[in-house]
Structures are given as structure tokens and as C-alpha cells.
Length: 265
Image (tube, rainbow, N blue to C red; front, side):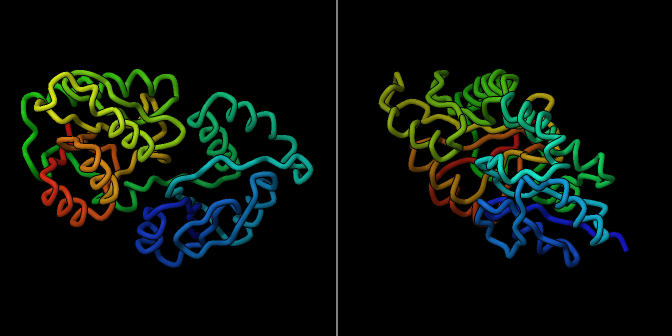
């Protein structure tokens, strides 16, 4: 019997995906704390882990949630995993995208197909349109500028988000993540040329050429609250390419704070 396994990361995405699957086997890297019950595994023993999946009849796997890089313990590598270490380490040194691709390749070479979150829960990925609020012409220009910045950063495998206000980039997303970016934007809100002008826009999009089966950008109610605290006018993202968690709550918080939510074409 063919089964599907969920590799759970942190955050609310993994529980949402687990609930949509029929009795999935759920696993997580042992340094993570997912919000769903999961069996731990270690990257240093990746090949035995793949053997376990095969023994359980797993032919498909979906990755869901934030995955922080593990601290590698060389003494824990088994002989067979050791043979693929150079590929994994080379990927990790090249950036998050390259590291993920290296791991996906190993899964596929073991006969396990990778499924994307938007295959399983397409409603989590909004298509083009404004979900609430109205982006002003100035907001639309800021979103366009932020999209250019994210595309440039993404090509360097740096991040998936930027904050632009009045045409100026206040912050970009890097390894610390979205909340750190918004905290930085809030701390430097005084750099806006016109204190009474456009508040600014958070924009998110996948990296150019990114494998959409894993690590799609994610926003949710907490992102909305953080954007409001940073004094932004709204959140925009690349339509059909960003996961929106708890849509109803996110929209409710945006309406309460006077923010727009826009899946930008």
C-alpha cells in the first residue's frame, strides 16, 4: 500500500497539512519542535531514514513548515549516509535553496516523489486579487519596487521578502526571518521622507527558479499583526505563490488594523 509521509517543520503549516492527509506518517528533524506529533530523525542518518520510509510503504513525501538548519554531528554519520555528505554539505554552503535541492534529490533517487503543499491544499495559496482593503497608487508603486528587490535578493538565495515605503527599502528578509525584518522596519520607520505619507508595504515571493515543492513563502495572522505594529499600509505577495495560513483570521486582523492584503499578479 502506498503511503505519504509529512516532514514537519515549525509553525502552523504542518498541522494544517497533516489534517488534510489520510493518516500520514509524520516525521521531523530532531532539533525542531513542530506543532504536530512527529517521529524524530537526524540528517546524519538520512539513508537509514529513507530505508525506514520504504519499509513503511512510503512513496510520496510533503515538506511543510519552517526548517532551521541542523547542527551537524560528524560522529553520528552512518557509512551509507557518509557517501552523500559531500553533496549535502556543498548545498548547505551554497545557500538554503541549494541545500534543499540536494536533500530533495536524495529522496527522489530513493524512489520517493515530492509533493507540494499547494497540491494538497490549493486553497492555502491565494490567486490574484485583493482580499481586503484597497492599495493606493503609492502602495502599488511600493509593492512593485519591493517585488524588484525580492527578485534580486532571491537570485542570490538570500530571502523572500522586503519592506518598501515611499519608494525606499526599509528592510529585507535574511536568515533571521520575517518577524526580524518587520521589527527592523518598525525601528527605522523614522527614515520615511514624509511622516504623513505612504506607510509602506511588506512584499513576499518565492526566489526566482525556486523549487515550488518546498519552502514557499508563508504569511498568516501574526504576520498581519507584525506589519500593523511596523506601521505598514498592507501586505502584498506574488499571486499563486505564497501560502496564507488562517485566511479568515488574517483578513479579520487586517481589517481591524486598516491594512490591505493583496495577491499581486
